[in-house]
Image (cartoon, rainbow, N blue to C red; front, side):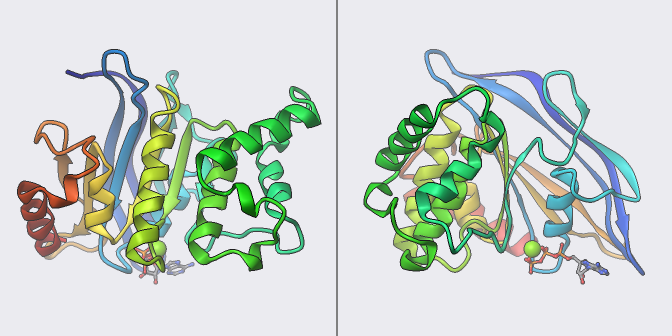
Length: 264
Ligand SMILES: Nc1ncnc2c1ncn2[C@@H]1O[C@H](COP(=O)(O)OP(=O)(O)OP(=O)(O)O)[C@@H](O)[C@H]1O
Ligand SMILES: [Mg+2]
């Protein structure tokens, strides 16, 4: 049982070119999905091959880059996106190496400075660190953590900003399979912390992206046309392939992934 309620993200006719077209006619929507007695957030992925324009689209969605034309509108009032109002975990995310993990996480709370006392901030960070297996690392520096641990700190930092929308560029790259699964678990739990939490994942790793998504869009080229666009929309809920922690073992899911790899 679920319902697709109001629109919370609407991307219309995005066009971007440099010396040649990169993205064209990119259109998609995200609705608030509700399920009885659950805080069900949204997880949407945009998947495509390397060089297809995912990072460019990521920047446009985050309000960090102006497209040549087209609009990105977010929130219940569908206002034009502004830089800073969506959390971002970039492809080459940065933590501050001269600050400890707890200090890095506090940066996420910067925007809430007036609303929270130091004590409240520390409590909230401890709470998240406990939940996501980073408790024993809080006093360390980023260089003393593994790549996967740093990745999780960077994701949690964005959650702490309080932004409902979080965009992630290749969140699974460079991680071994076990750590990848931890990142997947973390993203699922984030999506269930708040009804309006919405994760938009940009990735070439179709298996992992689809494993936690309710909706996926394939970004690819069409024959004889320059610039990539959305060539396929996949409603994983309708297909009965969403919200299942064991989905990677499901035969239908594996078939879908195999098919889509072929089409991207
Ligand atoms: N500033 C720029 N000037 C000209 N071309 C650019 C610029 N930035 C990106 N491009 C081109 O845009 C295209 C898309 O790049 P983008 O980084 O979005 O790909 P991607 O899908 O994220 O690839 P990957 O999976 O490797 O990260 C590439 O062909 C790239 O060369
Ligand atoms: Mg990229």
